[in-house]
Amino acid sequence: MTFEDKKMNSLTFSDQIPFDFNTLPNEIVLRIFSHLEVSSLARCLRVNKIWQVLANDQRLWESLYVPHIFGEKEWIKYFGFVKASPIPRSIYPILESDCPFWKGKKVKETHICFLIPESVNNQTFTLKKLEKLVKLPKQGYPTKYKHIWKDIFKNYGSLSPSQSYWVLMTKDILDESKNKTYQSQQILVESISKKTKTNYQIPYLLEVVTGLFITYVRFKICLPSLSSTFTRCQEDISSYHLAAGGFNENGLSVVYNDAAYKDFGVIALRKVLT
Image 1: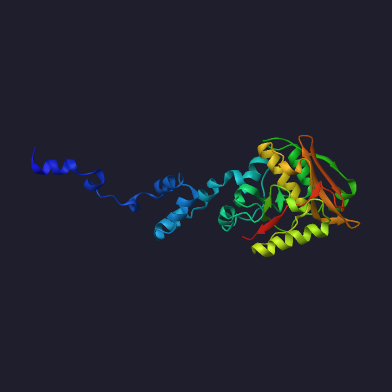
Image 2: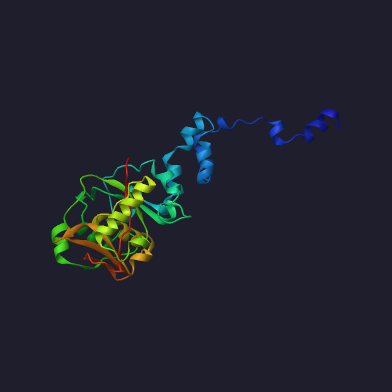
């Protein structure tokens, strides 16, 4: 064996064949990126302009948050065609940020993120429409209203959003909100929102019911704190605010009550702009 042969054998593969990652087809690079975790993919965004474009591919980020997000694809899968706004890119860093309500946890651990559509199957999206959808989903686990007072349906059952939008909603009732009046609960949410420089509010009924129902249809999960308690909503009837909860395998209850009871708290919700 010559000196040159020995020298070649001592070299690593990378020494023998110089390799430029940027020469790979974009499809291969995206496949490699698809195996990365959030932190690693975020670092790829800062390598160079080519990697920034590739690592910013919407499909990569959506795949990382599949269990946490219910968007257009999920609506189509479980219920039907929706007229939808695209998922805001700002949602991803929010999901990775610290939760303002539960210390030591990330937003993705304590919230659900979902799309409120403008219409489903070319019909306006309402509480009444949602009832029909969750009783007979295309797949998943059917559910229903266990109990909803007639005047609630009469006053709010046919109201629909003017356009689709995205929300982040806490999975649980805020601990400090129990056994308080609606006014006290509103002050609580506003104070936390101001302190953390976020835009949280008490949700509307359609938002709450949508979040609860889609979680059950998809995972057969009743959000824990709402199986025995209720969250109040912004709407009211005769100055009594609506509340949704008591959710179990038999369905969801919607009532109204404004007294300070331990079983009535609030969840917090924020809209995410596109």
